[in-house]
Image (cartoon, rainbow, N blue to C red; front, side, top):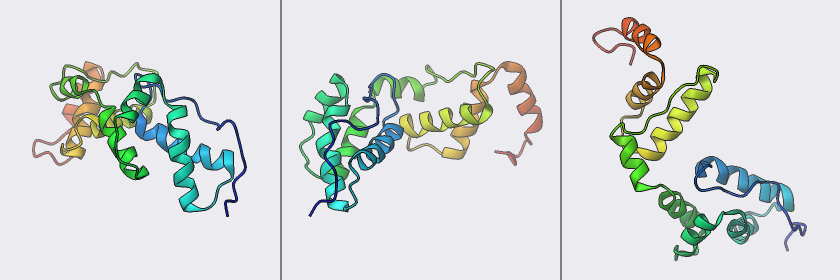
Length: 159
């Protein structure tokens, strides 16, 4: 017997394909469904996540969702995550045609998180620690990059 309550809304914004990071958004979405419905049973959570998902996606993501044939929620999530990555954006990232730039106001911690998310999204097969380091360095102004270069040993100890 389900222990959840009926609701017509859940407390999460609609996913925006060109703006939101799907990995971050899906976690919020799942928590919002649980919070909004009070569901506790694992099977019921999965069913509610499947039911609510199309209603919380923008048109572009909903069209992509319709192309997924599996009915297993974990597989739907994985497939949607892959299909929402624009191959051209991934290519531009991997060839350094697209980079992250620090605005001078954002904290280094926030910049590091943005860099890590982009590396994980666009280049999941890369050597993560090195890619994180070099992409973070690349996001900084020249004087900061020079300071980092002076501080790094030739043998790569600090990498």
